[in-house]
Structures are given as structure tokens and as C-alpha cells.
Image (tube, rainbow, N blue to C red; front, side):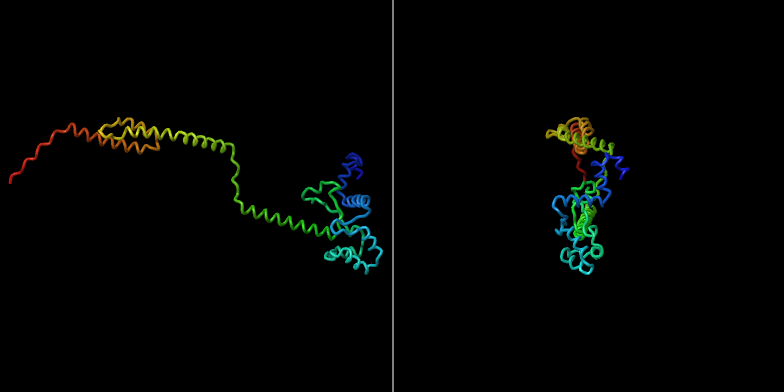
Amino acid sequence: YERVADLTCGEGECFQAWVLRRNPSAVRHKLRKAYVAAVGSLFCQGCGVDLLRLASALKALPVDERQQLLRQRVPHLEQRAGKWTRAICEPTEGHLWEADHIREVRHGGGEAGLANFQPLCVACHQLKTNRNSAAEARRRRQAAFQERETPPSSPPLTLTQLSAARKRDASAGSAAADEPRRRRRTSALFSKCVVSSEGESSDGAECDAAASDSDSDASLLEMACRRQGVASGRAGAAQGALPLLPATPRGD
């Protein structure tokens, strides 16, 4: 610790914070001192047993009588065989209580100060650890299940793909805006190409121009032009042809 103290601001807050993160014995010592100064003893924050009085009472009893006292004070400790045996054979404070992180280490509690610690008996500490581990495992299983059920998202577009998509959207928007005007123009030209009731028709060149301007309605204009050509041919035949002679009856 002397070398670390030389690298920090002596025995100030930086050094004390480093000791709390690296030395569990220092955490226990400072936590015990703080609780004794505040409430006069050290109580488990899970079951409420007085841990200092329990340690003193166990040390004063012979080994065969310690089990009965432990069953009276901390009955849930008997479910932990290894911890139960150590508490009977060596009833020290280190075998009876531990400094617990209120906010778990995996959630950032390892960087907190002394205020993030609380005294728990070894049985309550193990129970809390098992409960938190089960909750974390359940959360991971749910996250993995949701990840399997969720379809994979498409990769982000590159700058080139994004620029091309914007150009396509712009061209599609302009084409949609021009569609009503193009249809009106095509309809007007179509009406010129269709043969009127008196047999008059418009010039076929207008139909060709309309077909080149409007790709979507080119087939309609082409049909109108064909109808116009047929009607013009019939009119020319009616005007330029010679009258037919009556048929000469054949002799018997």
C-alpha cells in the first residue's frame, strides 16, 4: 500500500477508494466500524440477527452446544453444509457474516464506495446471490428467445446506396406528379386521332408524336391511328372509284 499511496494523494479519498475495491478485509473492517459507531453493533440486513453477539456467544460455548445456538439464531444456515460446519468449528466473524454489495458488481456496484455495502450473514448472502443469479439467467434466456424470434434487421445502407435510393424516390415523385398532365394530353391527342361522325380525321403525324411522348398510352394511340387509316382508305375509295356497270344478264 505504501507504493500506491505514493502514486495517489496520500491517505485521501483516492487511496481509500482503491483499497475498498481491492481489499475485502478493509471493506469488512470499515463497514464494521461504521455500523458499530452508528447503531452500537452489527446486524444482518437480511434476517436481523446480531452478528457480533452471535460470534461472542459461539466462542464461549463448547463445540457440541454451538449447533443448538445456531439453530435458534440462524436456522437457514443449516441448509449450507459447508458454511454450517465452518461456523461450528471456527466461529469467527469471517465465517458468520460478509460484506454484500447492495448494487451488484455486474451492474456497476464494484466502483461504488462504502455506502454500497451492507452486512449479511453468510446464509442470507448466499440466498441473495442465488436469487440474483437465477434472475440474471432468466433474463438472458428471455433475451436470447426474443433475439431468435425477431427477424434479422437489414444492414445499414452505404452512402452510395442511400444516394441512389434518394434519386429513385425523387424520380418516382416527379413521375407521379406528371402523370395527370400526361394523361390529359394523351386523351386530347387521342380524341383528335379518332374518326369523327362526319368521317373527318386529324393528321396521322399528330398520333405518331403523341405515341412518342406518352409511352404508357402508345398502344391506344396506335389503335386510333390504325382506325383513322382504315376510315381514310374507305373515304378515298368512295370518292375516286368509277361507278360500277350493271351486270349483263346471261342468255339461256
